[in-house]
Length: 57
Length: 463
Image 1 (tube, each protein chain N blue to C red):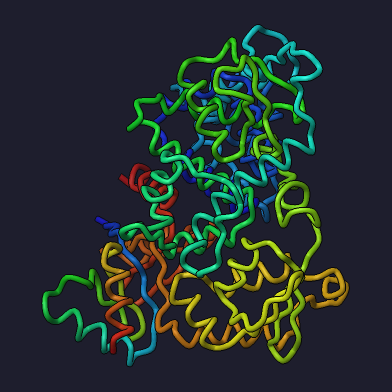
Image 2 (cartoon, helix red, strand yellow; image 1 turned 135 degrees about the vertical axis):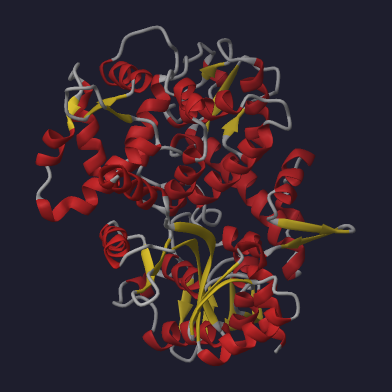
């Protein structure tokens, strides 16, 4: 049965994606689904926090 | 459709069906939705179905649209269904058929042909000549009130003193701005937020709608009936500028609203106890497509609809204005260097753009602001702004964008390739598909309702 999941599709460079994966590693509270090396789906509520953390890098 | 009507549309779609039922009892609401919210094809469908008493089979309706217009047709039908204007019914033994929902159809017929004693288009008041407020006075009042609101928002963040505008914001408005996340109050200082910046750079009509939607969301907390508030807003949109209207037939909620709306400059009341009110231009253009707001009433003081900004290819900006509000807005994304009595000079720099982007303003908003306020001498040229400046503003924004984010829904776990391909193709046709990966049988869409309905209808058919 097909499933639909709510989230935010993030498209970025592989290098940025690697950083996002690293950020997610601590608590696994950002990523909903890892799609391919340039795309992933994250939780909508975490988008702003993720952006802020990317700025710090 | 303009940004403002999209915004109000999103709000409307979120309402439950019973609210729609009550809303559509007012002819002014039905007419306002019809003329403001619907694309042309949807209007044609409504007009065609309006005087047909029996439901029209789906296939007949589909035959009106050429095969290559399928996407527009689906969008129009879907929108009408979401707004509870069109309902499809399946009777056993008969093909599926569409008809207009009843309070809507009856109200729209009343609105178009007149008649009834619904008073939903306002009741003009009989007042003496002295009490009638002239149109220039109304425009001046609306401008002063609205600039007061905007000035309150930008004032303290940019350090430009706007206190001489002479408008004291009521606590209700201040509360609304803070509640809507447009400003943040730290101690006694008012700080503008990201959303606030985006708000400031919108056109006036969009700003008014944003504010009214905030007001609506707040209405329940003030124990006002959302439906009553909304239908009164649509009524306001159908009133005539410069005509006094009577308050006698209004409910207590609506009288309270009049009082609140006069804080924004949307309506004008001589005193809260007066027996009549005047709608201003902000009210009468609420539901018209014209959007002629900025040109007529707002912009800067006397030189109403004239542009005032000159930009040179060396990024220097000259703004012929003495309005503190205009200067404060300009300062959001330019580095102002000198100020003369009737003009300010400054420069667009990487830092100033990066700062604005960091606060949530997009390069497109800045560019469209500069374009719409370009000096007439600039506006004669094509393109209006120097290409180098436009490109550079975009590049400066991209510098900070490390990723592209699109909210929506991921569809996954399809059993077979065929199961996956059909909805995926459908999503592409109706224009909601953002991303797909054939090998993993996953795709991402911005809206899920139509795709979900498509999946349901398929699983129903296939068993």
